[in-house]
Image (tube, rainbow, N blue to C red; front, side, top):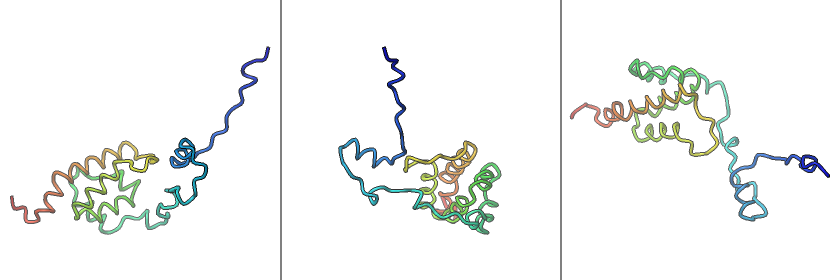
Length: 142
């Protein structure tokens, strides 16, 4: 009698995109490469400018209350801090950007470290309840 283990061979696996997997399940034979969105190709190229804080970012950070300052975000994700500083005075754009940081709409993000995620959530709360209302009412008139 043969052992069951002798007949079992490991199955080879490879990473495929969601589009490729769905096409196989749906019975489609071919998925063209133009149908597959590769996020790695659309990401910004890394360069030193992405790691340097801009002057605008320093000014934005200095204006934040002490309990809102995003120390870990600035330290580990300076490009995102620069983008935040750039959109901070535009309430609609900034609110959308903060939402995008907290939500994974691509399905394959690793996510932020817990400390950074908390900083972003705290910053979003501050923005929604304090900063955005002020910018839409610049003279602070009730």
